[in-house]
Image (cartoon, rainbow, N blue to C red; front, side):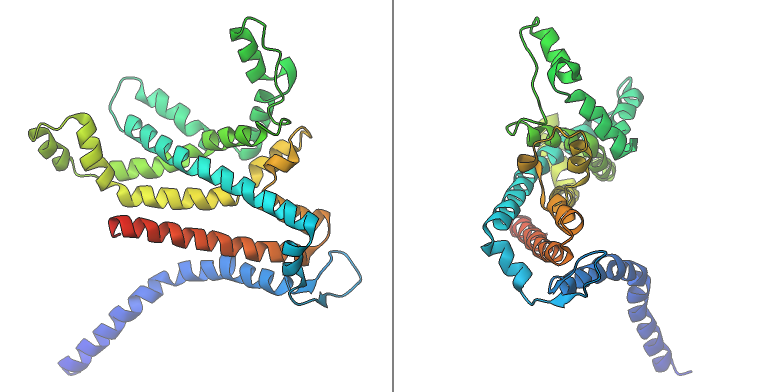
Length: 309
């Protein structure tokens, strides 16, 4: 075979190597992301009821217009979106900063760090159902709840107790605290891996320049793990908007204020299965997916403009 033909064949093989290695991931995205979204898009144009002898009926954009014209449905969907945004605005910065602080602490070689790491990783090992049961006991109303009992002990008995999940002013905040406690370990592991990849020579050079620990953190650590922090913020944002499990599991006790804690995901489940309106739930899914996509694009573009990444 001539040298020119062999080089052309080798170049063609190199070009096919990338798509070939990426094909399993692309196939997974097509099966678990693209196909469900296309199915939801198709179902949103039909009136579909589960376990009904009536066939699906094409209604066009009726399911979408009802989301913005029906007063009750529009108010409920808007409140669910507001709860999602409130949850994300609090959880994303707090959880990212807390994950960074814990990763920096765990990365240090201190006495008793093994025990500390065990307690930090423990929430990640627990099943979410078990976590919800534990926090339901913590947030129990009256003096039966662990949190109320502790506050009553420190107040000398003057604190009579509070319904943390039933009070609209504290219901969403209680779920936020539980979510941060349960999920921060996952982000911390990602940040910890990035911290351990920062070259030690950079810290040695900073020490020679008489930079203190805080200056090293700002000028060496943060720039070195910047892309990882961006990734953590992005996935935390996505996880925040798909909030469902915590609200659903805690609400099984019957004491959670629904209006202040209902999210778009819980409303989609209730509409599709409890109210037996699959088409309306599919329309909510499509709109919610588009909102999350736009937020992710804006967030990524804003970060790119600031740092050129």
